[in-house]
Image (cartoon, rainbow, N blue to C red; front, side, top):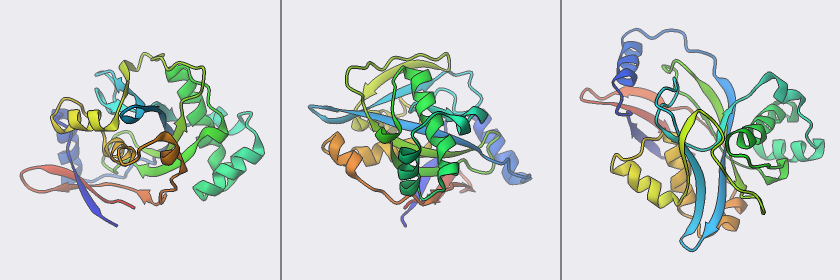
Length: 232
């Protein structure tokens, strides 16, 4: 598996917290289950994806571009979902259906809450499984899904947690990231890089990537901090 190093965010508070952890590691928080969704649609320039920018006051990932998603709620385990569809998706995730259901329910619920789209279990395609590094003060065990933009619906920013939303090609947002005009966490960068390799939404959704857990580690290189991880 290739080894990647991701630069630290340009945030004094982030660097301060990271260096404090390296100086005196504590007991990592147990990550909370979470789900996020790349809602994609075709354009003349290839697939585009719906993204949102989190407000600067958020404790986790402030001012960062993200896909719609969030943490699993207690009620998600009892969501009214088609059992056969959950079992089929759980098999693709290589999880028991009881473990997959809250994640799937959270993905569907969060997309509706954050951008007004109604997805079904059958729409979701698992793309990746990432765990927040141990030093973070908020940690998530996050599943990334992809889903086609539903016909006849419109994606709208519908949450106070974000201040901007847009349909973007992965190439355009990655260029903004490289130039320092957009801030993103490592999994968002990797998901965009993967999407950029596909010519159409159909090809992207037909892909079956390895779902090995990715858990970046904080590394001090002396002159800078990086998050290092092997990618599947």
